[in-house]
Amino acid sequence: MYITVGRLVRGMVGPEQVTPDKLVELLRKAALPDERLEHVYVEIDPLGADLVFFLGPPKSGDLDSAARGITSRCLRDAPELRGWRLAAQFSDDRLPLLDE
Image 1 (spheres, rainbow, N blue to C red):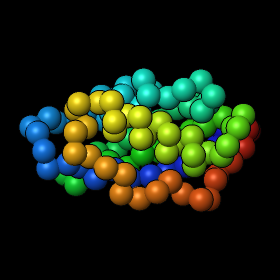
Image 2: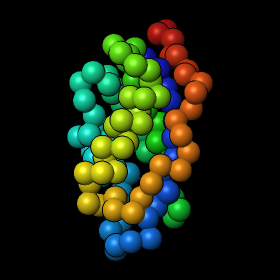
Image 3: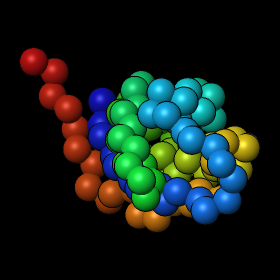
């Protein structure tokens, strides 16, 4: 399993308050099987959200493109995230998690 992180900036449009659980649900819904999303962790603050994706080894492409694809579809398809945007690209450093 690998970790990659990114940051979303909250949109100034709309009254929607998105909880961490709701954002996790939206991201999971946007993920495709080939992207191998195993787990996602979200922390929300007044300015946006930090995203931590835990991904299985990619079948094609790389981890960053899988994380960007999931996030892009989520931002495009979820009305709750209208006006939100990806502020920090997903890290180029892929951190492997070692099985103990």
